[in-house]
Structure formats: structure tokens, C-alpha cells
Image (cartoon, rainbow, N blue to C red; front, side):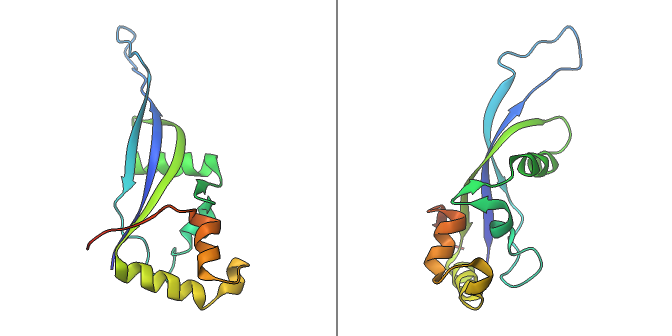
Length: 128
């Protein structure tokens, strides 16, 4: 059972050496967080609810801070956009079961409504 969150990140490159210039100083790259998404109903599994809204990043400053942590030193993140939740069938089934068990916490009446409310249509099921 595996799932990962993928984000598009725009970074700014800056040289600390006065004789070096970088043009353009901004580049867009795709950063995929290759940490296993926490299993449903375990600590941290509600990341999607706490960080996303309709498939978009809800708090851009917080997301920029997270992306800077993911990338490590040397990168200034200008923007972060949620791309997708990549998941296998087993994770998606457990994810949906956990949502269904507590729809009230999501202020929704169906699992489909929760998926749309937080992830938009940004779920991709992949093999293993």
C-alpha cells in the first residue's frame, strides 16, 4: 500500500559569488515527495484535508516552507502548486474507507464529495 503527494515547485536560484550571475534566476521543476503518505487513520494521514482545497494548496506560505524542507539548503521556493496524489489501489481503498467511516469530520455526505472538496480530480492510481 503506497501513496505519494506530487507538487510543482518554482524555485529561485541565487549565487553568493558576486562574479556569478544566473539568468533566468527562476526555474520551474516538479518535486515529488517520495515519502509514503501515512496510512489512513494513522498520524498525519489527514495531510490532504489540512493542506489542500479543491486540488489547490490552501496555505501557500506553509507549503513553501514544506517544499524548502523537502529540497534542502540552497533553494528559495517562490511558489508551490499541488499536482496529484499518486496511489495504488490498496491505499485508495483504505483511504476511501477511512473517509467513509467519519464523513462528519469532513462536513460531507459522500466520499466522492470529500475527494472533490480537497483533492479536486487530482488522484492518479498507479501500479504498485
